Image 1 (tube, rainbow, N blue to C red):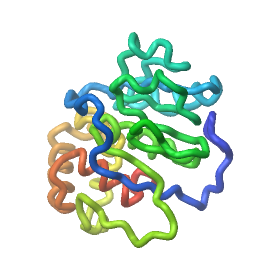
Image 2 (cartoon, rainbow, N blue to C red):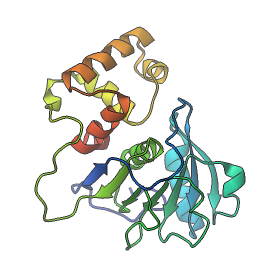
Image 3 (cartoon, rainbow, N blue to C red):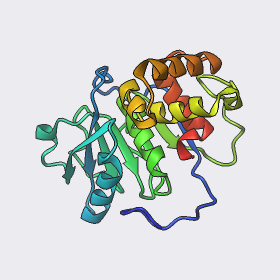
Image 4 (cartoon, one colour):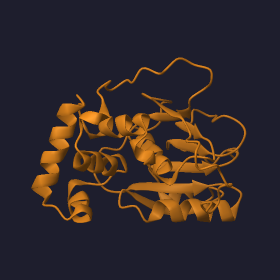
Amino acid sequence: MAEPGFPTRAPVRRTALQVLPGGAPHRPARTDTGPVRVYVLGSDPLARAGIGVLLDGRPALRVVGDGDGADLDSARPDVVLCHGTVPAGPAARGCPLLVVGGTGTARDGARGHLPATVTADQLACAVVLAAAGYSVVPQRRPRPEPVRAVSDADPATLTERERQVLAMVARGLSNAEIAEALTLSEHTVKTHVQNLLGKLRLRNRVHAVIYAFETGLTAR
């Protein structure tokens, strides 16, 4: 069944995306641990509502508004997520801009352009990465196999529980939220996170998000 606001897509074909470090000179990436504040921008109310439903139930994200951008200043988002064509003016307010859908490419220094075929997990992960200062774009074909910027470690080295924890880290959940979801102690989750970072040779949780995104673990 198609997600609200997105066209029907073939279930056997997964969208291939690439994470790029850095991006346009926006305000500094957020460093606090609270939910990422997202403003959904676009001209289609149904599409905006669908995106809001996909994102607002996730502990790592909080939708603080949607519309044509007139109330962006009062909403104070960490990331602006635009559906379709980026309107002139409102998006350029020193806030990372992420575009989903539409036929063009992201303009005005946007942190990424995602096709409408992204999964809900990929979309949420891309918002977390945009808030951390990274860009997400579709892989262009033909192209050689991309070199991962963070690690070339095999995800098969992880246990099933570590894979579950990594997928939740990639969606921006804290150790406490992961512990509650998996009925584990917070100390046990912390141990799993430390173990998976060591096995995958990753420096921090942001790199874990990128690794999970590029290896497809967020689309499981």
